[in-house]
Image 1 (cartoon, rainbow, N blue to C red):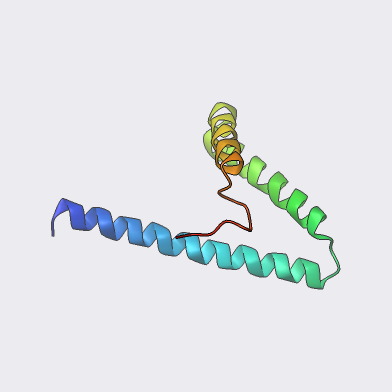
Image 2: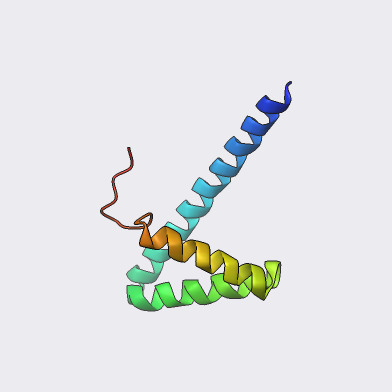
Amino acid sequence: MTETSLSEIDEMIVYEKMQTALEHQTEAWAEGVADGIEPEIIADAAFVTVMRETVKLFGEDATEAMLEDLKRRMLTGEFSPERLIQ
């Protein structure tokens, strides 16, 4: 196996894990809404969890850099529901 194909396999594994993680989060969101929790509260709780875990894993400086990157991605419309993926 070549180095390129190992890299491609690694990328596929990460992609599959991301898809599975998104499915779990979508299910948790739906369960919260079904339990009568407002989406704004679910979103806030998700951000709190993400921030705590990210700071724990990477530290405050790296988390700040990630937030700056997320801000840039948000401002370019990457997370907009109306965004069309081509």
